[in-house]
Image (cartoon, rainbow, N blue to C red; front, side, top):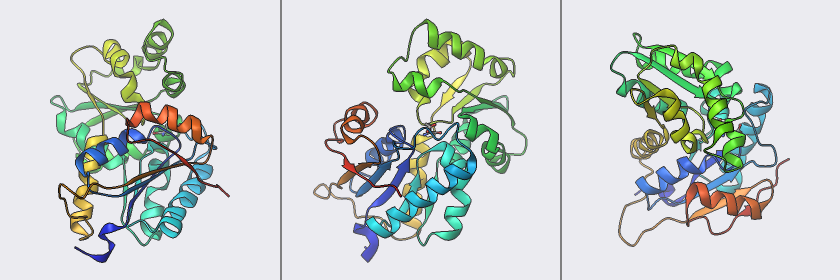
Amino acid sequence: MSAQADQPIGMFDSGFGGLTVARSVIDLLPSENLVYIGDTARYPYGPKPASDVRSFAIELANSLVNDFKVKMIVVACNTAAAVALQELQETLPVPVIGVVEPGARALVSVTKNKRVAVIGTAGTISSGAYDKAVARVSSDVVLTAAACPGFVEFVERDETTGVAVTELAEKLLAPVRNADVDALLLGCTHYPYLSAVISQVMGAGVKLVNGADETANSVRDALVKNNIARSVGASSKGTHEFYSSGDVQQFAELGRRFLGPELSATKYWQKK
Ligand code: DGL
């Protein structure tokens, strides 16, 4: 085992949503140590200009490297990965994994008719990151992309069913329904919580894809490739630390919904 193996994996998101990715990483790699920062003070990233999101992502990633000595960074936020992944990969001294490439791979792997769709925040969809990622995975798959402003807020309010969210889904998903797709990637950390509504609107013939598990697979592969995986053993359960730039109490409460009981306490992360 290399000297770096015991150092934590660093993960960040605009807030709570990336905890769905943390869940998948903890389940797949229980012996890894993890530090997660949710930038709730500046959340949401989805409607913000790409230049702002890029500078937040750089600040968070640098803090994980310099203050927490992480051995790898996971950008668990689709919006941040869509606009900042390449720059982070080019400038940081540790491997950097995003959620976009794994999501695109998972999406392409399930389509039969080669017509697929992705939904995400305005920032994610307007970046074109998923168009490029799907084209890299397969040149003969047609992608329809749609922004779904408002979905995140419904999840935050814990209003994941009902007339209002269903009406919004019917409106926002209309272009996707018209595109005759057989697979739809939930390209935002929050959307898995709206699976029931989205599935009802899209119909049984459309498979919903969540990239979190494929992202965890990419994390595992990168740890192995870089020889920095922590040895797996019954007695070597990893530690998990959670930080928030906003209200830590609220983060712990809402975060438990996304992650589960591992989220016992949250510490404060000071943004610049
Ligand atoms: N985490 C963001 C994403 O996956 C959604 C929430 C936000 O807009 O900040 O795109």
